[in-house]
Image (tube, rainbow, N blue to C red):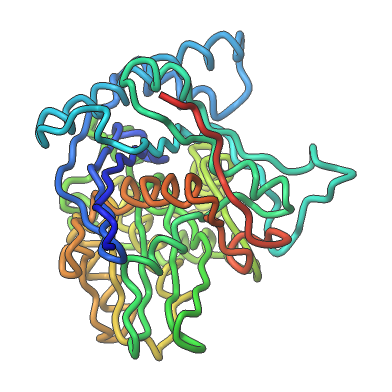
Length: 383
């Protein structure tokens, strides 16, 4: 007897802090699809609180608890929008996969693993209130996906490669799926053998460009990369940034705002100016765009058949054209060409990870995160 299709909701709030993305995700045997999507913009005060929580500050526990409550309420609005669009009742959705908001990511890198006798050495922290989300929606919530991988010696990130394999792997094709959000990560599919998957964070995605754009233009992001296109990359500044040790790491590696942030950027700018250089704001933006594309392109092997880009960076025409140039003519498309819109991929990944959790199947790839082995991820909050 053929199983009936099941309905799931995936929620994602990424390091760009632009808002909460949600999708209604369907699984019918091996067929996976998204039918609806919704988004809620991150309110300014909540965004500022989440940014502040990326570093030590006053009354952190209180601020974090209130921010988690607000994030749950924003997530519930996304869920209700999806239900209204689809006409589904809450009881018809099996579960919500809710990632939460990463505010600290200190996992170790370069193949360095946590050990059970020193578990405090590595951690990743996502603010969330899945219990409140379950109450507000009447739907089972699966959350806290990263901590079990970290407990097993992994970095807890990236987690999307297993989903990329399920969604995008095609027999006979060697594909890279590159997500350009606040940070950027790459998944390599089918390089060594059919079914093989590897992945890693390449470095900053939009985070530095967004920061610089907001500082100088008041806009949260550089629409279509137009501001970067008006400038010229500064070779000496780019070369200085490329010396960051993260880019030389091998093995499992992941990163976040803990490393690539305003302090990091300002230190490089000051060093460049102190060495006698001069800078125009639009040239800095062009240089940051070049850094992102360089850090992605250098990790992708030339034997690929195509590169599939998703996330907010896929809407940056300057970034996309520069990435294609650096890849020397390798086909570069967005995930829309494969049937899943670029801004829906990460939310869909967490719906799929919730499916894995409730089916008692692993959600991590140990070769990607560095964990001791496959692990069932997430904690379940019943409706």
